[in-house]
Image (cartoon, rainbow, N blue to C red):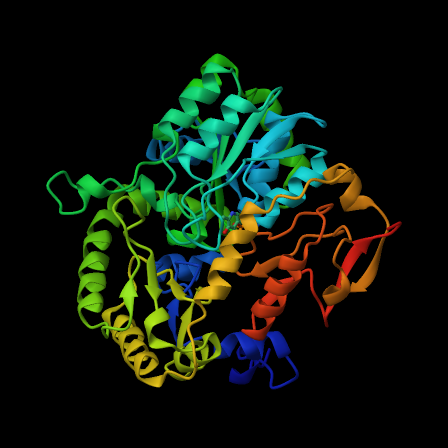
Length: 490
Ligand SMILES: Cc1ncc(COP(=O)(O)O)c(C=O)c1O
């Protein structure tokens, strides 16, 4: 058969998504996934990936019913990540968390949760019929992802009655870590389980050599601090395909029966597709091997690149980093530049630098462990230009404080979360929605952390904040063309 060379190439026809994706190459990536468009993988593995797209053959087994080689890969992962059992979830931490919640709790259970949890948690609570008991917050969170403090969690654990468990997020989007040891002890003393959304913390399992500079300050994993179930997005911080996720069960949760292993196993095929992706699962095997053998050296290189980068920052921009934060996350505070958010985004784009998020004061970068020096140079050059540019009469500090304050407003609802989620709703101008009950989640995206959960009453301060965020060209999930969904009957 005649096979023209062009038959192996993409046809020059209308392929809108493929054409757009092709344009994402040759840019400086400071966002997830941490495989840098596949460049972090070995050449052999990159080539093999598409060939690995297969079904549950005898030779490779079934991800959802682990035995044989699948079980072998999971056991190796459990050892690396410090778990009694680990699972490969090929449909994201969104699904790992849903599986964890479904395994640990029953419909109607009261579960402690921070209002500033990823929208996948809010959606799962609604789907599973769990009652969200917000952790009472009275201290302004450090960042606009609304992380709770250890004191606030411990207080809620003491004060709230009839709680079946707690779900917490650490690290946060900005690399802030919540110490878990005392929280886990307090929860376990009440015989309730602790589930951790560690979507951003898969790399904490990397073991640095004992005399390396970073070893002492390297963050501890949630499992090592006593958490029962931990979900991690491998694709966010390790070389793995999107959306490769790991779900880990702790030794203690297994031994005490606090989490039923049979119920956990039963939930896998309930929430995973019956055709889980082998390329994604294989990339989890790859990421685990990388953690075991190559990651420590790359962390050392990344730290060198970061410290050189920091030395090149203009005085108006500083890295927001405190002891205990994730050393791999770069949060750059541009408040003193008086630059508008739009101006920051435009300059980054002009330098072909793609970051994870720009908020009213900060640029959040997720470097891969092997992000090249040339990308850090492009980021530093962007920062110099941002510092020179100005572009705004005043800082956006007020908007930032308003965004962080939203987590202190926890509006109770007469309807359950599930009832609010499924109740009839109607479209409503958000600017006139004061006093209405929100039918959906309202969440700036990224990071996808709800400012309002379904059923919460909309206050004047909420509307003012959304207006401000929209004026900074934020995308807000739940608001479209100035409209939101509110519950009918008000
Ligand atoms: C804190 C947090 N939890 C959960 C998720 C969901 O993870 P995934 O995208 O792997 O489904 C995200 C995604 O950004 C996240 O930031």
